[in-house]
Image 1 (tube, rainbow, N blue to C red):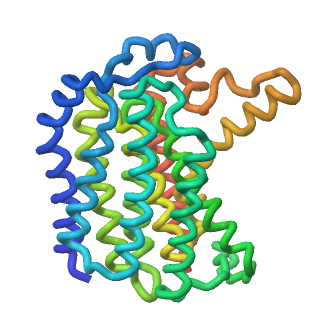
Image 2: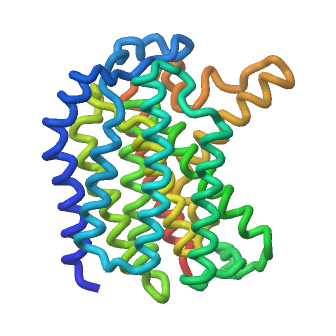
Length: 321
């Protein structure tokens, strides 16, 4: 395909973020939409208290505008936008309750899960009836399809819930989530183009995510002037999960998104270990805090995680048939 739509998508998304940032960030300051820092977190993070959050609005605006302008509005692309925007609404409500209503926990877990179940149901209905997605799962390396029947619908729910929450957990250091999502979605743009038949619209959507995340790094790299909040992290997680589901490469998603998998697993392992033995496996979870408390600077943790994310992405691409 021509490179022009891809470049156009990335440039529009990045430009939207870069142009709205100088106006939107002062507005967040004025509205006092500041981030609350957990007391049990690393002590060095207390200095970040009050930094504006909900900057994810800029990211999602950039992705949406770029996709609508540059991508063919096929059912596949529109469903990807729906999944992302559905998680954006959940994240926005979560942030709004925490920041404006001053309720630290935001949306209740069951409320968030209900929203994600609704998104998953719509995804399954449109995916099977309009896009022809079947109940098989492609296994990388072995290059074989395994039909898991009704289990596939549970897999879709797991991928959406797991993907969105994993990126949410990754968003704990300046630039960590935006950088790793940009790397992972760059790789998925390649996946979309190499698969037969190619998913051109999804590739354009992918690079829109990349452009918006790179633009956001201008304001989110250490020391961050703004955080994306759940508004951005849940939506970006939803967008990443959508790419895996709509390209029918759900297993490959876990390889390319290795950083997100490790972040989520570290929390699960920590909770299970502490509840069953009273001992912690990590100094603190998610795992990026483990390295921080081990003496790594925030910037070192972020750059090492970016590098690992890039290696995981290349490994994932090497598994394509």
